[in-house]
Length: 456
Image (cartoon, rainbow, N blue to C red; front, side):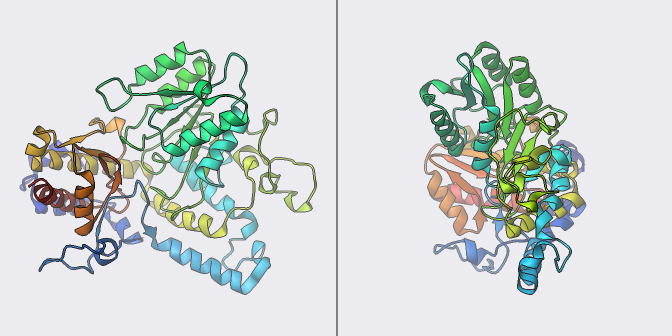
């Protein structure tokens, strides 16, 4: 597909026409992947106040634009989980080595290594699936945060996801460091909503007490995509360890963690990776540390060398790379659910998905500003996310001057599923694996109608 402006110039249909959306969907080579997912029906998500009109089918698919919070269920995941239940029933403990479908549980985590590595631009030795996002961040801080009298601060965004604040504050306290001193945050300039790369780099250069830089790949509230390579390079030049929380970046934007020399990164898998609520998380540790045993780490059975793991020796011998940081054996069901989604990613290709994502989000932004022109001019609604496609993923954060929750509730009643972040923001995320241009058209037209009702 071309860029949106070229498409509009050549199209026989105006921007506001549903025919344009349908035509774009017909040209979309990735449209087949929507059939890989279960789209919730309106009657199950609209709530008690569901809007019912003559031409509205409650048993029709909802408009789901919430992949930034929880991705939809891959049909393959259900099939794979059912196979694991079959194996459990047939084999019992023998499923660890003699699996009905040739996926022995003793090496189940190996199945997701290569596809995870492909998604984040890494080598298989650099990644693993384990634990949950925040527990992985704690684990990485145990290893990479080595405070001294002169370097003892950890840098995060002022409006980082709350769990990152909790993680860093509690970790500092565990090291005997007052978070009021050790936790350093950076906020946008006055009157701005997003951070400037030059401001981040300037702070890193000037504050010699920073030990670890730990920012988000994509900022959860504003949807801003940070310049990971530039910031990582600046951090290393200043003598810092640089790690990333990629919860909103993995599966959303292409990453090159190995080439960018990122020290560590952690992510969850239930957003764009569609592994299911509370799904197993992921970890990246750069290859340069793959045999580094000089740093402390939290150690557990599954991190021991897989060649002698079942010899039950008391001496810990870590596996090479990221796998050496695993603790307990991974959940079979969450790992295999993740595999179901990763198989679809492998077929679609993250770079192809990114191209579609840029066009989807541009269409969303352009249609919003056209159909709600008066609301934007009157400052009733604004977009916090950067307009530059290189500075965002698929998410647009819409800020409402007032009555945001009323807008949100009215959208849900119409079968439009987005998410809210109090007090003023609704996040909208057209996910290229399963969302369509028609989804976006419906969202904008429904929002236009809702605005008239809420602000009448």
